[in-house]
Length: 274
Image (cartoon, rainbow, N blue to C red; front, side, top):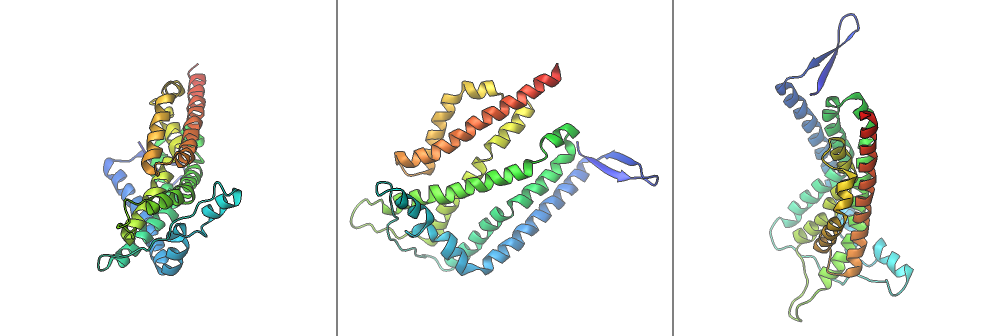
């Protein structure tokens, strides 16, 4: 349980157990501060409408996007470009509400370090001193992994997925003209979940600390995990072997890294128990 630290008149530190209502009150203020930060960021992002949609949202649908230029630079065999397609709106107010939604998602991504920091401040007092020291850089690590996952989804998954989905045809009478809301929803689906998926090593670290996960079990079910990763890659990407390879390999590497992390945590626990 978290502890509230107060200084007495003789400068001694007194620790006082917090009640359940005190915890709720503290949690409420952490949530409020996080929401305020997200709202302020969303307002700022909303103000740069032209830049956000031209340079971020619509960038993967143009052949000048960094990913297309990179693969074309490697060789002609790996070169690919997105098909030309128009984005339309079918409902009144779709552009406005999509603009609001995009601003909110980008604000959450931008404020992730602060939001996670507020979450960490809430749970940190409940940890022992050695646990706090061991997880002292958790905010930095989680932030880096989250942004790495988001960038991976944006620069790798999005270009391949857009090229396949926009170029797929069932007949000459069908024309690909996705709605603005549909396009941005797919873009969000290819980036946000990947960011949280890259938090796997941190999740395994804490599960190993409390004994729910061991390196032996992860090694035992490595083949099962590999199949699950392949299925996951097939679900979130087009049915293309090369694309699934690009998605599956980094995730499997994260799984292997998680095994090493779990083994190290379990080793330290055994050393302390002796």
